[in-house]
Every structure is written in C-alpha cells, then in structure tokens.
Image 1 (spheres, rainbow, N blue to C red):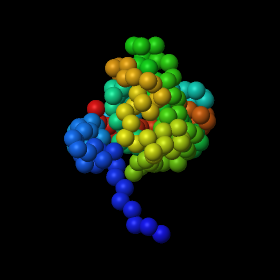
Image 2 (cartoon, helix red, strand yellow; image 1 turned 30 degrees about the vertical axis):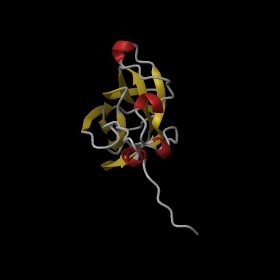
Image 3 (spheres, helix red, strand yellow; image 1 turned 180 degrees about the vertical axis):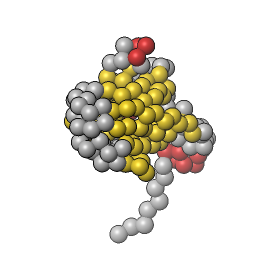
Image 4 (cartoon, rainbow, N blue to C red; image 1 turned 90 degrees about the horizontal axis):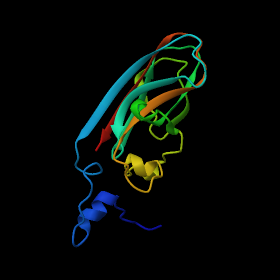
Length: 166
C-alpha cells in the first residue's frame, strides 16, 4: 500500500507554475438556483413533461433535488431540453435521473444529480454543454424537465430544486 496525494482539477490548476485560472463555476464561484413545482394529475401518462426551470449551457450543475407529494405510482426521468421558445426538443431526457420514483412523498429532497449514470460523478467539474457531449458551448439556455417514465395514479405535486454556478 502507498500513501498518495491526489488533487482536484481546481487545486491542480492552482499549484501549476505558472498558475492556471480555474473557471469560477468549479472553484470559488457564486451559486445560483431555481425551484419549480408543477401539479400532477391522476392518470398523467408516460411521456408527460413538467418544465421546471432553465439554466445556461455554461452552468456547472451542483445539485438536482427531487421533491413530491405521495402520487401512489409514477416515475420520472429528469433531463435537459431545448427551451420552449427554441422548440422544446429533448437534448438528454434523462441526464440526471432515470425512472426516479415519485410514488411516495419526498419531503426532504432526493439528490438525483448523478442517479441515471448518464452524468457520472467523474464529470462533476464539467459545464452542462460538455456533460451533454457537445464540442463547444452553444451559449444558450436549456430547460430542466421532469418526464414521466411511468404513469401516475393519483394527483399531487412534483418539484425540483437545481443549484448551479455559471
């Protein structure tokens, strides 16, 4: 066994000679957030979407927290779509979460940022555009959308809180 010293990207940049400036969204930046809630009806079918908020393509997403009332059944993907003004197409419909249960009440928030495996923890320092597999920042806004992957059998409320830096 060996004792090792490992550094995050931000600390590696700080220790380089000459120093490399780390993007503020990774180290020392200001956090921003949005919270969005939407009503869910009894019988909303698979594919129903709930547009919760928007983030810029250069955002580094810190946390996606899922909340809901007891909806009895239902599951949702949480991902990234073009804004409604830009056509609303899915970019990565389950980037953050895939088939996350909304059947039971979640009152303290369930951290689902990396639940789907599409956005692995190893990519935690990446801006959104890079996590989406793009080769350059498109400099636009994206909607964060909850899409049902299993139908609901009771009415209730779903909500997301997304914390990011840009």
